[in-house]
Image (cartoon, rainbow, N blue to C red; front, side, top):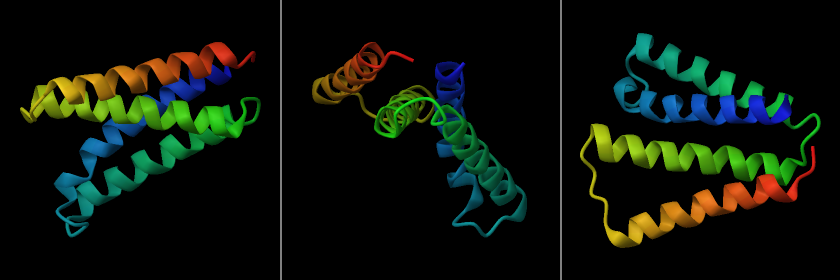
Length: 106
């Protein structure tokens, strides 16, 4: 259950990262409220996962999911560049997340 909560937290973090820009530096109340709610939800789910998972592992996986998802959405939605080095970085992040999962027996 903790790993499911952690994956959900990472997915919410991806959505949260995309919700920052529409706030226009937190000057728009509606988008700002959505952004804050998503951030709180992501951290809440992360904290629940940390009840049984090691803190370092949980946080590394959480940020890894968020980073890969944010970059992937940037490439697909915003047409951000995807160079070979950026692809290598993504591969290393995903590999680290997988290794952290395999190394943690919970």
